[in-house]
Image (cartoon, each protein chain N blue to C red):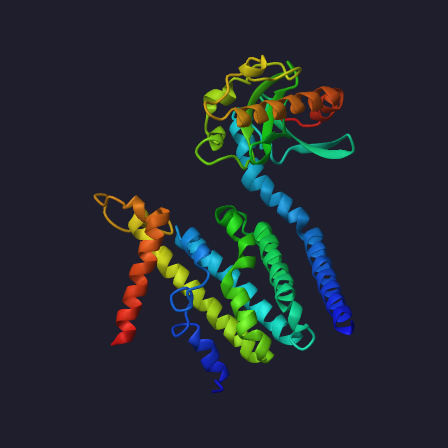
Length: 197
Length: 197
């Protein structure tokens, strides 16, 4: 069942979109989606790590002994995560302050390790690149959607712009942790309704 | 045996490459990151304690070496006279180092005010140190010399309720700042003259 490069890319956008379809990487999903800006920032950081790690893992898959593959993957992933962290400190310090500990925690994001283990180590470079990019963009889209729902309902604003009239009373509950679970659950429910038709 | 050697070699090579790459990147971007920290972390702290300064204290700075470490001093021009210096010192808090920016009047040796730059204190308890101006105002007007202690330890500072460890950390940071100030007072006074309104 060989897929084309295009299919490898597109599957990350709906069929296997994280965290809805691949229910992985929930920790950053629930934690940073308080605002759209954070959601996009986190998504792009993860995408960069995913793409780079996928490429390198698929290049090195012949060299890495299978017994220590997980350790090797983690070294590769951790390296790129630190690169992202340094770059964010250098060029987007406020985003770095907002995301805080969740940037270094991309290392243990199961999506990244999952793609290295399940896909990149068994495939060639180009499909791995497409897979990483697709899953990464899918993740970014999901985070953006979740954070858009949470930010608009929770604060009445999107990226600092007032959405509703002044009579709108924000559900501050939505930007708290339980709101994240409820929002994720409802969106998953909508996705299932759409795809079951 | 051969397999084992291969595993060791792969891990060593991978780790060294990763370490080398990251060290190189960090070196390259360190200056930029320091600037960002200056703008987003130290900047607001400095501005908040040197409200009366007519210049930009973040731009007017000099550094001195104290005990082989470079320390940056920010100069505030008040009433046309460069009489205030702000610098950072650290104390051991509940969650690691707690940074305090201390502004001292070089003519009277009195502390103008203090502000917290970085901390990892418990949210909602120790983290109140960011906003608790009553606590921080206790340091204003005191001579930047000698012991700063909370009342429990026989000092004059009233600790924040429920956050004794954090309060002590602030005291020890201010005390270190005082020690540093006394150590290089004459150099500071010489340097400060170079800045004019």
